[in-house]
Length: 202
Image 1 (tube, helix red, strand yellow):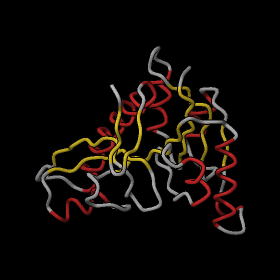
Image 2 (tube, rainbow, N blue to C red):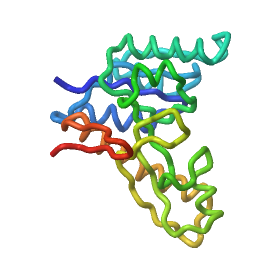
Image 3 (cartoon, helix red, strand yellow):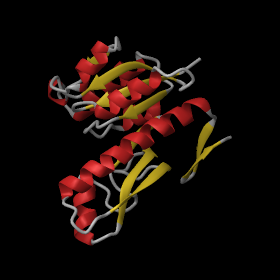
Image 4 (tube, rainbow, N blue to C red):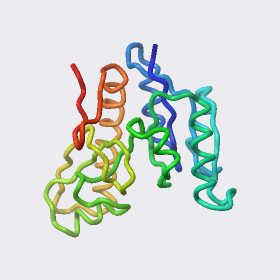
């Protein structure tokens, strides 16, 4: 049976599109069973609907406080009965209730080589620091900000003439390929989190 995956988005859904394409390949190992967003304007919702995947939206502003939103998001994701939840450009931090339900099964991707340059400005911070290698990290989400156990990393060289925009775009390409490769790998092979390490058998 394929691994049931819920994908969470906030924007256009380029990572979602890559996962949907991969899921069509025999043997890739996943079925995207739902796509959730935190805003009605998320373009990836249309991609999901075109692919016949159920969608839902949980906007923070529709709830009296962040805890209520976290409970509602948790319930919406749980209704799809996922084995794995993937943040593909989801711009909200999930709270205690969500992590209690999906802890150890919630993946996120970040546009730096963590633990360096956590937060929302990874490529900019990398350029300002003057590093020669940037990249992307796929990790298992925990209670911190970009602090979870690392699944995989991919390096992206920094060019002397890079701007934030050019470096960000090259990282996105590598990040997307890594996300597709690793989600399929985790779907097909047993894996576990041991402290700071993600161990994939086989």
